[in-house]
Amino acid sequence: MTDSRLCWLDVRKTGDLTPAVLEEAVHQRIDAVVTADTAVLAGLPPTVRRVLVHDAGEPADGFDGADLVLVAGGADDRAKLARAYPGVDFGRYVEIVDAETLEQACESARTEQWSLLDFRDPTKIPLEIVIAAAAGCDGTIVTMAADVTEAEIVYGVLELGSDGVLMPARTVGDATALRRAAGTTAGEIPLVELEVTATAHIGMGERACVDTCSYLGKDEGILVGSHSKGMVLCVSETHPLPYMPTRPFRVNAGAIHSYTVSQHGRTNYLSELVAGSKVLAVDTKGRTRVVSVGRVKIETRPLISVDAVAPNGQTVNLILQDDWHVRVLGPGGAVLNSTELRPGDRILGHLPTADRHVGYPIDEFCREQ
Image (cartoon, rainbow, N blue to C red; front, side):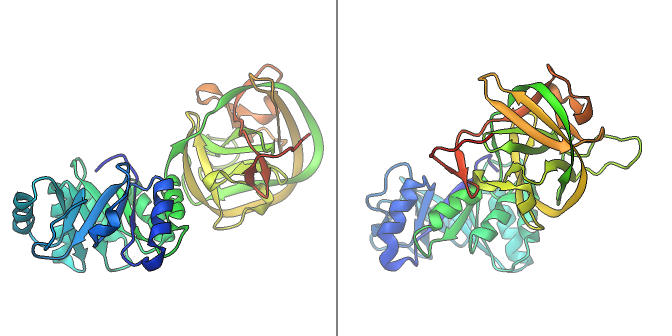
């Protein structure tokens, strides 16, 4: 297993769209293009791994232009081809349909440098078994996925995920979608220390609690702010409270007008989130993961406004429920009660660089105040 998240694109059925799909794949820095026709590989830059899927026997014209050839069958078949074509890497293709072929997949994952796995049943339990069997091994597992939705799931199985996904390209845009799916599993964003400059009790209003479908860590929460260019890291309810049990899936996030960050760098108003929405969970080191929203509770509560300033002079505002148990995160994972914030206190935040239009970053004039 590796730490990479490989994006492989299958162009065996793209037909007349193949040139356009290949152009997009190169632009999106797709890691490999997979085909059964060596002619398709001609002209691809060295940044793209050129992969052939080979059925059986020896090809009449060799494997010219291929970096890697994936072959079904036993080790003897691959060894014979490797002797005949010493300049080409060979890997194993396994179609998993029952317990016997599942064991073959586990063996391949443990012993082969490259394994392409095709799970014919919709359950992901066989993939979980293969990933567990390959723990500590050096080979690379690439799993076939029917579409982007399945690709996102495959990348996240057992929290480790498959090293890579091979997805069929059906039209222009699929390469971009696959690259985005790989990017939803992990990443980092820069956090900055903000200095609180003022707080004010502003009366009643609606605030949103975001209940996720995941347990959040003690140093993890979501980014929330009144403005798209400045947000504060609001902690989940993982820290003990004297009058109620912890709810480690929940973030008491802020007033309903507030922005938060979702997948692909888009922002959403808290009021827009519903069951099934995606939000970005962020820890105090800036490490991120996409989590699903299970419920959003919007209720009328007293509110407190917190103003802060970044080292570059940019101002940030956050409006929270005005209650002691609502908290934000500070440097070193410090947990700070909203009602006890004072000028000079330091909290963690994020400064997105782009303005927003319907949640998407855009380069245009926009003033928020």
